[in-house]
Image (cartoon, rainbow, N blue to C red; front, side):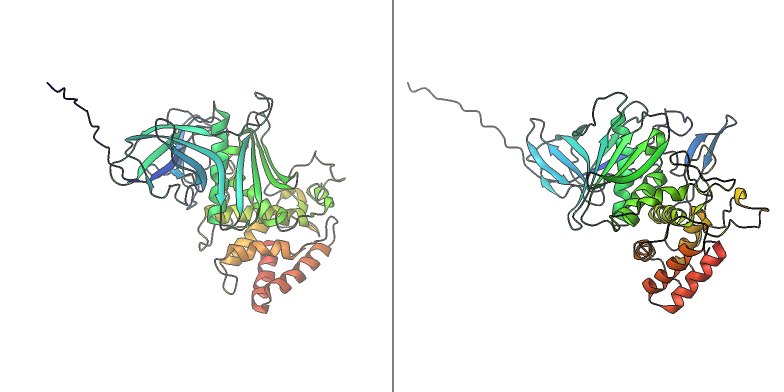
Length: 425
């Protein structure tokens, strides 16, 4: 009698097209606010925060973009990501996500669930620009960290997009601080892409007690470094990124004398760096106030609607600067005999500069809602006159502005705004 072999035939799992979208969850409601740092962005809006008096209040910073709105988490725009089968085989990536933080459609090979990995590394192929985030909390690690992050295992939706929520707690994990910093930087590059053909390094040193942020050249590359809780302030991140866009990128040889410009002391003599610190309304030599004002303007253009007449610039809700806008002049009393007397010749402040620049987009006869044109003025005016209580800076800058605009009507509007905001001295 012949034996009969029975063979079990596996039923093939039908493959289908999948698309995965990654979003950050920066809204951990279980984490209470503490001054300058919390389980969510401390300057996104609307945002709950502990008032100095002890009560919980809800404030709205008034910006239109990058808002902390429940149900609309923030996308990992252009970040590198990888979708893997559970056995480790690659289904998609490493490749950059799109502007919405999504993959394109890929063959899921019949998988019902996947592993998702990502990198704090944004790539814009058409602009040949990369933005790369490092954790350099040197208090806890001997060197900077850069490695793939594991978001977790997720079920694939049988139809439609699979939305992956990447959660974390920046209070306890330095890598989550990098996510906060990098999200703001890649959002800025996506919304206002003015930085072509550059590699940009974003560095977190969040464990340091001092709060500061700085932009500079490092090894021939553009870099921005964030200490203390500054990584969690999207306007501050966009401001430092704005320095790279408005000055360091287009002007690779900044005059080294610029450092002295931040140190005007109305009581005299001028402080010696780094003892002097600049603020929104501190008296500064005009060339320094201009450079900072352009970076403020860039941050305002990232987070505000370009067509509105008044824009928010929010630096730190806990310290009370959350509501600063471009609506009125901000003059510093240290410069004046009375509140109506402006600083002396050659001395201005950065808030008046960004107010005048924003008004240039929203005044009849100005440049219209075109921040790229406004930003280009800074590089066009290089090299500018530095230091000195003389009108030499403004004399040269205004002449360069007239040549840059090439339109007498726009120039007249700009000069009128400069006078109204007190930056023409």
